[in-house]
Amino acid sequence: MGLAFLALVIAAYMAEAVRGGLQAIPKGQYEAATALGLRYWRSTGFIVLPQALRIALPAMTNEFIALIKNTSLVLIVSILDLLGVAQAALADPAWVGMTMEAYVFAGSIYWLICFGLSRASLPPTAATPATAATAVTSAPDRLMTSFLAIPVVSPGQPGR
Image (cartoon, rainbow, N blue to C red; front, side, top):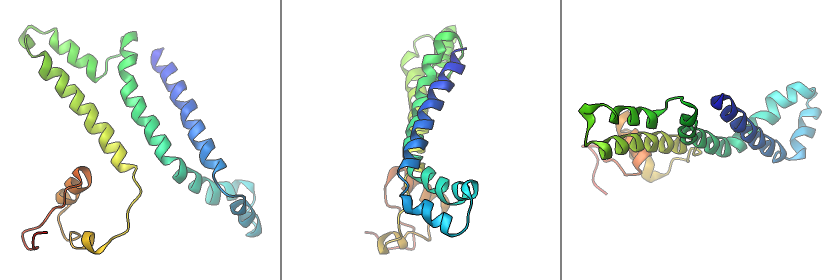
């Protein structure tokens, strides 16, 4: 029951984000779609909605991150989440004295998910000469660069 209410609340916030994205589309986009001969549904599906979703993506990502963090509130109605699993593990006699480790682990998992989602929602940047030099690096190097914002230098490249 609590999960259904949480889903309704997040759905309302998502709808508000999409509505804001739709309102941000200039009237000229609608007029251009009509001038191309597109009817309402085609102009909405091919012209307006893709632009609105791109505008609303940061707000939608924030709501998704809030959903991940708010799943801990659903624990009250006895649906287990990551924090609930950590608390259940602490009830095991083998975990006595490891309270800090369990909560740090759960917190770091939450942080990794939220940070990864926030980085994934950033718009792509244009390649500059400084970033073009690192374009030959391997996929794990690029992943670490995007998450940690630390420049990666491959063995064949001069240092910076």
